[in-house]
Image 1: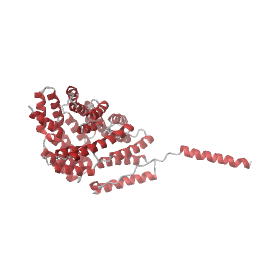
Image 2: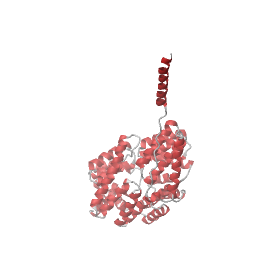
Image 3: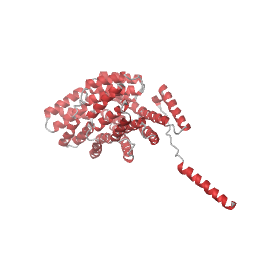
Image 4: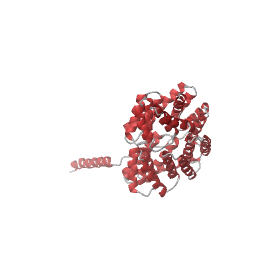
Length: 442
């Protein structure tokens, strides 16, 4: 009997070991916190954020099933991505954490909202809209979810629906994010005084020095900028920089103010400071223009290539990963225009248009690429769609004027160009140059 006992026991133990291996919960990976550097590491904010994040990491090491801490960590990483500009790492880390939460709790409202927000950040707008609608069904009384629905509908070009969602948001909880969305919609519909008023309310609803507040103050400065009030714009950029020393977007704003005075060396220096602090392709893109204006073609070409490389890497990741990776085709279309690669610009403009054909900015991109290719009648079709909300953005109006003039509608086109150049000629050097050239040829 004993001779059969040991093999039987071994078989039982082997079966138990196999069962443990097969049914054991897989160990969840927890992405780590990256160190900040330079001015971003100065002050109490980083000390406090780091302590809070390390506390959450410790809780998860102790209790891997602590979904509340996992969700809070994902939110903290989303904020780190916003502050540092390191979206490739932090957005991916946050999405990984959110997926873990949603596997355990599929109807976790906050996790769905955070995932929707991440999708919007990555320009996966249709997916973000779907997730926000799913979250709304779980909690139709949340102001936050109506903010997501506002953003997603704007990006998809559903502007009437976006207005409804913004109204719901403000009726539930009027605060900084709610006022800011009202401002953005008013700008889209051409109400610049109303947009400035709402953004001013947003700034006043925030806490001075917090990234969200100073981002909003920079947005207010930019509204003054596109309205042609450079004095007010400079004042608010300086206020944001004083409240949040080294803030990259305030530095970039002051860089544009220097460019408006044609002080290109100063503008370049400010943009260089900004891009040291935060990874944002827009800084390299705008430096391309500044170097050309300053008579530095080699540096301009270097920046143009850097912009394309940054955007192409993000787009490649997005194409290979349905859930993550930054869709950047609209930005790539403009970047390729700066290197005179018109076929590539058209390719990426079409990709973006196929994703969201109702968005006015995407239609403007299609119109401008077609204009650069000499396809003026086709460009006008898209420009009409781009102007359907009545936006008074000076760059949009100048582009519209250039297209109309090429189609023989000189009076209408030249009036738009003159109005644009009178308001804010420095906003886009290429458009400014084309507008001035055309008006000089009258």
